[in-house]
Image (cartoon, rainbow, N blue to C red; front, top):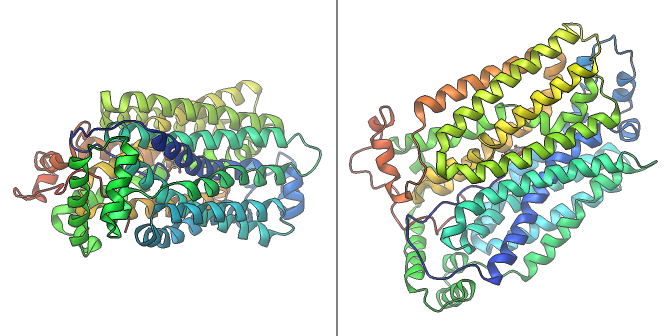
Length: 515
Ligand code: BGC
């Protein structure tokens, strides 16, 4: 979903054809999908910290906020309904992605993108004109449907349209678009918070702009050759491939596409397949990677940075500006990952990023504990506030060049064709589920666990870093059909993977469908 995953190389094959106008339009529309997702991730935190919004919809939180700073700072924002405003989106996205998978397969990718765009548009408008909490939640649920559809179909569309040689970069590009979306949301919140009235309406309503681009774009986009093949339109598929690649010499790629589609059609029970012993490593990673990605606590920052900063006593302006700063760090660090993931490999990034996050989580927890203690009574001096912000930024950077993009890339590149739909569906749904959990419970956990909550996330990152060190083999530069060897050579996974495992049957990842 975020980052969509499932884009990897095609095992070293070089087909003819390069970056045509089609590919560029594809990138623009696909970027809208990422931007929208990022925008939704980033917008709710700032909005929930705006006084006018709180007074209107959550007056009890507002009252709590104005209690003396000497009372329970940790619990200021502990309100289930307020958290539901953020988290409901991810529950809807989880449910919608299953329908989206069916529609993407039977009706084609652009139909899904169109539905996603429409749902986004409706959600943004309902939110912008909301007069009660019900409208807020309904709007968020519709946005969730948009996320489910758009994030299920756009990465598939992207990976099928792009020439093989730029697919890896495009996968990371999708994550990049997410981080840009988050940053744009933070900037808009900063701007609208200065409006005398209705700033929050503008923040929520502006999501309509990329949604409109997506709706119109998906209307004009052609369907992918893979999708046409899936629906038995052979001649049309060949013509489309020629158009997209800008050359008539597409025989080899077309044959590979046909083979891959045929091979995938034979896979009747992708879920049963992935449960087989020989696919144990993939099943384990497709579950644990998205779980770990969310339990790093990153969305505490993405969702609740402004609220968190306000809890720590920052003024409105400073809270929203701090969110902008973390947004910039997030985006720039993702860029670093794009530059180095193929050079240094995945493991180094995971391990370095992990150590960086652990250090910062313990430091942030300790600073907060030192200043607020168990009672949550105290204030931050400007210097401590700056330190906390700096460590949060270093933590975000660590995430953004490790678990952020790799959390999507690795599950996609380890799954051979026959289990890819199941692997991908697992990755996306586990991710959405735990995104929901963090969104729904962070403020309550903060109220109960106080500064220990940051130690808890730190301990989780220690566990996942050790796990990666021990269990994840390096997958950098390994063609998809040779991935079997990587497991065979691994001290632990070799016991599950038989010698004869023909992993990665079919030709690369040209046939990508979600279960
Ligand atoms: C994660 C999101 C997160 C984002 C931050 C993505 O990879 O899936 O949950 O908000 O990164 O940039």
